[in-house]
Length: 416
Length: 169
Image (cartoon, rainbow over the protein chains, first blue to last red):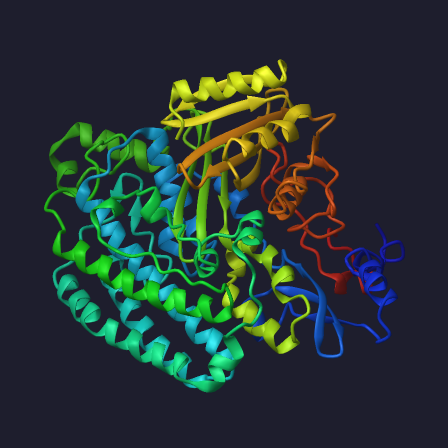
């Protein structure tokens, strides 16, 4: 292919909405303007590109174009042994790395039929709920930034820092921790972690109250959010939308409650729902979810059972370091795991979990070897993004920005 | 999850409507899976929708290389009231990878079917916007296929095109 027979504009032509624009134009007298929005734009929360058809300031149509950070993680995963896939899938939705890791580990554990010790399950719950608060904080900070409230961003990142410090303490990494292993977690929580976590859960409810009052006692914020871009539950379900967006429309669907996994059945928590399904509800549902997450962490910490933090199945988990010096068998297991990895019985499993953005499902197909034959993430952002168009049609362009923020798309998860 | 008996009853109900539609049922690790003929996918999913599986969670592709029929499409259905899940699978051969689109019944399948087309080359008949979604428009090949080599794919930058430098050179 030479330079002459390749016309980039021609290729781009196929992704314009020229025919759509004409349709709208027929019964309107005003001129329509097609505006390219993104992919390099701070308000798109990543490299999302939107082609927006505007009539004056009103959005008549829009089309999301994605793929700008497609890195082929699912393909890379097929070339790695099972336990080496964990750090790769963690990098999909970069604000929900514990959830990515858990969705994947859970799928592999189902295939292997490995029993995860209760302490490991509780530690997973603690870290996932911390991660949920962290993700919601980043979302709250950046969304308020889109509404013009700069200070919220600093408040939210102040609490986020505390959570990242906790992650660093338990795993050594602030982000993409690779704390979850197939069969349990990497290491028990260190001395001092519980105290630091208690300090965090002591102040967090008060901070959430403060954030809430900054939002719902502010006339400007309320006017920007209330009755803006609502979408009814029926349409959301048809579009496959899950998570806080669906709950904001009044559907109390939460996998942690309805299909408990990882000991979530042991904890007492509520599923916050909205009623109008507008941007205000989308904000409030997430803020209330942070409170519930704090409650779950508190219960998990109080009820944290003693015992192993990873399965003692030596075919799956590495033997403890001290055994290597005394046991030949441990040495063999260690060698096999590090060089080849464990083999997984053939089969196909879809493992859904409730991530901060909705149902995160991991599909793993094993062909019996030590590498997965297929790893697929059903990422909630990818599916939820389809709701942008019905939400924002006939709304103002300024509300498009606010709605996009309320949608909470993470492009790393969308493009994978 | 429907138990093994529930799955068989479901499969029998589907067989009553169309004797050739169900090819196989499998109850694996506590989850129900049902394999159907590619031609009957829309009818099957509509029948399951009428039975309460009203939420389509995921549509994803699988490559069963080197087995034939090689390409697979999986549909994860969810019944929110009874908290029940079922996986519907189909397989199509590589030389005619055509499946009816289910976007009319489930608008959520729009992006996901486009991804399956993009990654595996399965074409969805009746899809309103049957184009690539993650890979560039002019990309050749379907990268998630098992015989597509990992690494070595060219990186596209249009600036190279403008200056006459080809990206593979």
